[in-house]
Image (cartoon, rainbow, N blue to C red; front, side):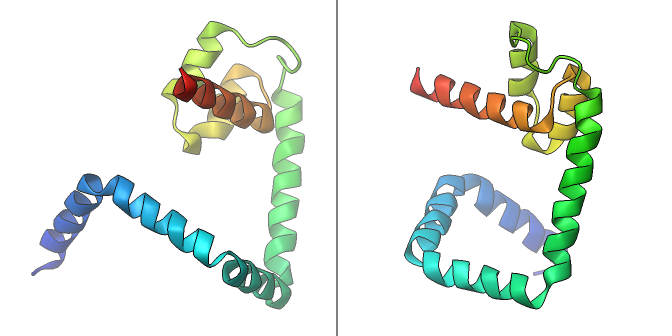
Length: 120
């Protein structure tokens, strides 16, 4: 089987079995929580610069977004809610800048909206 056909097959399998795959991954994480935490802690101990860089990047990003967040503290509008629900979680920084909100507020609001929609 050539590479392109294998990729197509894998993609089709994933789309057809998305829930099953997600449940299998969640079960693995539940059953191996301590092992995963131990692995992550060891990685951070052996690679302290990775964690330091990540914290520094996050600090800089938050500082930059605070300057752009002109609507911070104001109530969310239905238009903003619709924009959040229509966007991908990978576009959080862009959406936050467009709406004049912080990254944390966009993530929190998106999570609450999805939770509320799931409960209805």
